Length: 247
Image (cartoon, rainbow, N blue to C red; front, side, top):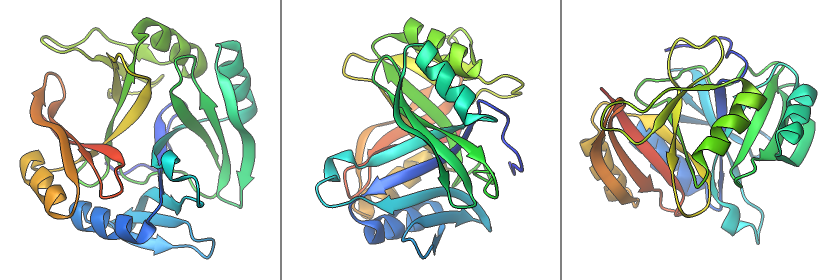
């Protein structure tokens, strides 16, 4: 689905922090059909059918432990979002800052320790494609405090959480004004964090392809009630991500 403007509170962009950008380019481009567009700054935009969908940047030496995917949610006013995060018990990791003419970004930590970002666009509206093969298609939050997470994000972004589908363990999330669920919260006993799911036409075949490219399967593929067939994997640098074949 093509997107020209993400609603406030919706997931709108993702960054990959990686120690090896060249390896990431080969892995994800081959697996998901992306084209890599490198900027003079060294930042890489990945595009699908001409639409930017995610980005990647090389970690500085000594930061290898920070490798991972980060999600950004749309904000019409980063200062107001920052205030809302603090009032809800969260912490500002990186205050709002301009990113050239593209827009402004901030990074926060929720009370449960999950890190996420917010994006206020200027020239760069965010991911141009969502919920289709090769594009960001689901966002999963694992947390030891499901009720606390629901309350936090409801206060910050106005999200609503639906009752888990029959047989499922995940509370599905919808942003204000949204017509489709975009993610879910599940109970986890170790830490808290977001996992990004990329859409694929065949999750079993894609998982096998990821392994052949140097990745590894963490769990699945398995059916997830109300979502489809999913698998959690690691890329060659050990970064966790997931694939989803929507039902």
